[in-house]
Length: 442
Figure 1 (cartoon, rainbow, N blue to C red):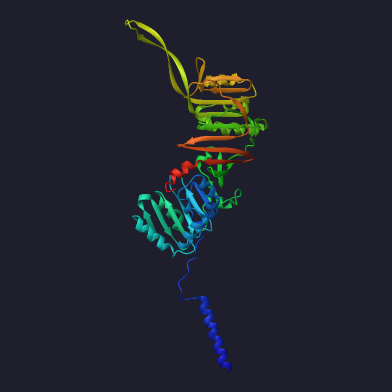
Figure 2: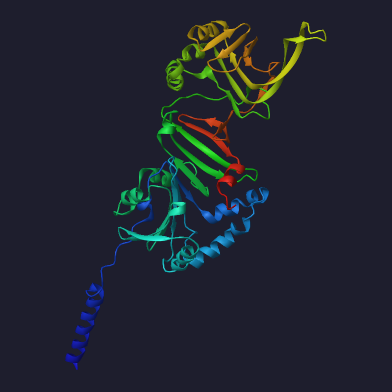
């Protein structure tokens, strides 16, 4: 009896050992974290897609987006479940200034993806190829590359897929790329549904180390809260009010800034001069002399035209075929330009310096900055105003610090809210017309 019981316990021990060691099973490959395969890019982002779509409902209704019924969180969630996509977890997006971009979506299971990929293959000329250990679905017409592993779906549009794949995906990496590491740390906007992060040379040339952007709900346009971190600590505080040009509605480019120059120490002043000199070095603008007279308000306006009349003399033949001089009037459109800054001291010395350097030239009673149109000059009190219109622009109180600039036919608006030691907080508005024209299926 005891021998049988001992034998049964021995067999049970062997069976348990066998199940624990699993000597006949293939080795299970450890699933790497999605964050480890994310490719470094000029702009990287994290999206909680369902919450973002819910937040954007008013925006889609206001802009009458035709396909908005397919962009509700309920519809997207139902489609995601059908194909095994985990859109309740963060979705990752990336883009480069060279034009390529893409996204990475977590998966519940890769088995359900086959029907979706088969549908894409039926509707498009899809080519599949093997790169590394992954089967890549390619639609060459759109430069689209799609592949998946057990735990993620990778989507890429652009000309550099193989380079991105071999650098960031082919080899198992144990570290997160730097931009993604900074984004995921995100001390600025930790609870927003869409957060973008950028750190590249185009920012650095303007003295910006990196930038965080987060979507904020706004029915009229795509509104982003921003935080810019500067390369150097510049305690350069803004005033919440000042004097400004009464801007035209047709203006395409606007600068409206009110700086508190009084608080600058000698060290900080030298640093500001150094940074501004870097930006204006090509024309050798006398930044130091400008800082000596500047009182803090600076406004610029470009855009639109105004109609002017010019008298001229034309020689004509009368009914007796004799020549006669006739005074006539012609009309022409003149580009609208205005520039205003306030001074603490007499501005004449500074203007004379601009004339000596050739940055400002005088033609009769008119002036010209480098290749600008001819401008009139009015100095009234502490206000120096250059303008191309018939009458000088109105100078009014302003409580905004803003920059509105057109770039590649798209107008961006940036408003400064506050400045701290190394950070500039503000907001960026991107017109919905540009976004809708880019995303043609909407």
